[in-house]
Length: 205
Image 1 (cartoon, helix red, strand yellow):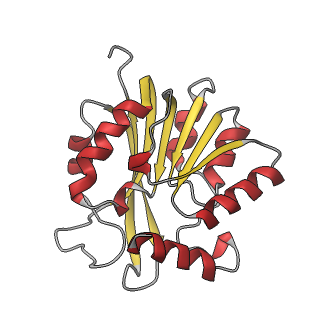
Image 2: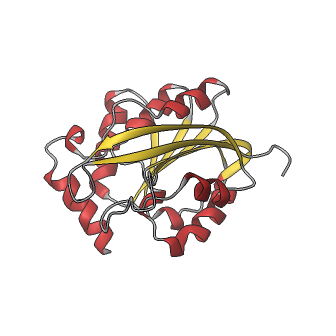
């Protein structure tokens, strides 16, 4: 188990309920709601699915959902949430960069996974996305952003500029961008800007 896996496993172990996790959000990202509303359901991939809040949301919208996370406790919570909601999820315990599905997805969601990856793994993630996301598919990303050049923390999610994210995912087309603020404990907080990106892959690939 890596140090990062141990840290996340400890956070899940100490949380009395999913709602106590620092990244928990009851409502799906704003641009995920918009992306879902403008297309018919298909196959969806939730990267770093955690307790399955957004995976269950997608399943309730008619998607066939695969959730990926490297923390067993997170997947156990996601399975319980799906059962309570009477929906089915396909869950895999693995590092996202090791996940190699037999078929692509119409929608890929990353609500807090990429910003935990070091810069050395960005190219591998980007290459994987081209394998995960079908032509014409939608990619929704929630990623910590930089409010100014000194907006930096030595711990926690990496903060990247909006321009850097758009450049990383070129030639995907940015459909829309939104922002929200998370209130987090020190040393990560006390607050952090989160950029919400909705990209679309060309249907002609």
